[in-house]
Length: 71
Image 1: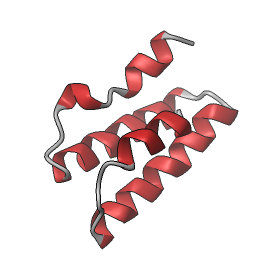
Image 2 (image 1 turned 180 degrees about the vertical axis):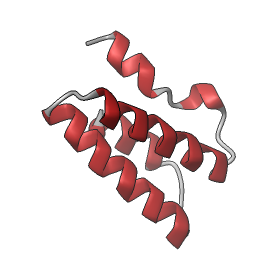
Image 3 (image 1 turned 90 degrees about the horizontal axis):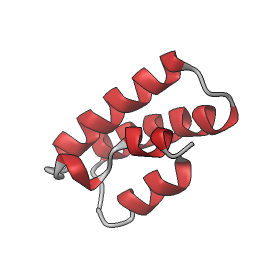
Image 4 (image 1 turned 45 degrees about the vertical axis):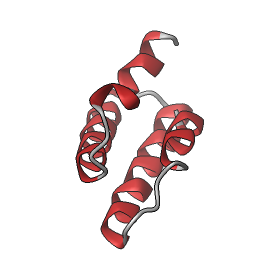
């Protein structure tokens, strides 16, 4: 998940607040890649959703669930 998140974020110049949310999403993505846990997934989806809203990104631009459905 971390690689796809990084690929999505590389298209943006982040503010300090956005970078904070990006770091939180990276931490959750690393945890999900290492040990899948539904609580982590929930936090990851919420953080990515907030970050997407801050970036005015289209919802379909990055969907964390699509990664899970391919696992």
